[in-house]
Length: 384
Ligand code: NAD
Ligand code: USQ
Image (tube, rainbow, N blue to C red):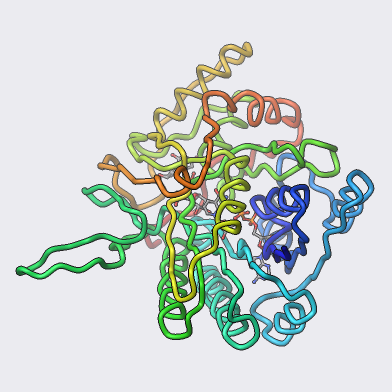
């Protein structure tokens, strides 16, 4: 089966492209390489040194004999997108190709506009290509758990059945995202849902939690295949940042009380979830939503877990509470459903088993590459 991985040079996309290739799918990567450009613009670098995409793909071919085609270009460029898809003719498109940092989207007007234009227009272009040339193609689109925000009721998988004034309906679950980035994913979800309704597109929206871990079977095969590990204040997620901070002896940067709860999954589960979605496609006209995560943690608890694991490695870790640069609830209810991917056969990995091997060991191995200037957060949600 031919699968196009859009954003295949990025963190989730790279691991997914190799995993699918290893499983016998015919894989191509489409990527504009813009993420490498944004890193340069912000003067940040992944902790783990990643090779150029062409070098990575050559190494993969040398090691396994498998070829992954590469198309370098922007999905906002419609003629390029159309030409690429007509050449590759995918049966499924996995779409990771977006600007994915909440702080990046909150830097200023330009970054908010760039994020929403890049993400929303790119996805809209894909929907038109599918309508016009590949009406049976399955779109597997990466959404985010942050689309839901933190409502004071349980979070369902995409839809909620409501009874109101004696009538009943199943409706899209309300969305209350917390950044212009997370909002771009909500806009995407609405556009995809609409395209499914009017054109019969088949789509799966994977509302993914925070992904962690460097290692998958494939990216661990060779140093040149290593995946990225972002720790800076813009692209680094809290868990990654805590591990690198522990490695260099910086107090862990918990924002506010640390009472914010989020959903998480291991990168090895990301790649498996994507395969499960591809292998069990949505029906024509169906807009299917899966909540893609395996565990939920409070940020303060994450810091405690990192401290405990780091202590077993002889590291002395302090936990700091910084003024929260974001505007978000300090403490809240958070309980999300995640049964659909488990029902399809996902066997989760757990953070307590991966923290050392897939995070802290990498943080320690590459700690001499840490730029101290990138540790404290610099982007604030409030004006001025
Ligand atoms: P990433 O920044 O590492 O990778 C994204 C890739 O997409 C980059 O290689 C970038 O160059 C490419 N890209 C961006 N815009 C493009 C465009 N217009 N045309 C072509 N290529 C483009 O991000 P990631 O962490 O791998 O995230 C991938 C997707 O998964 C995103 O959509 C993100 O919202 C979603 N997601 C990520 C996480 C996480 O924890 N990393 C969690 C939930 C959801
Ligand atoms: N936080 C800290 N200290 C830090 C960094 C963050 O306390 O040093 C807090 C934040 O205030 C927030 C929580 O940790 O409450 C999560 O922040 P994060 O940066 O780890 O994750 P987030 O901004 O939500 O974004 C990440 C990915 C994004 C993905 C999202 C999944 O960057 O692409 O969509 O996780 S989810 O959180 O489910 O929306």
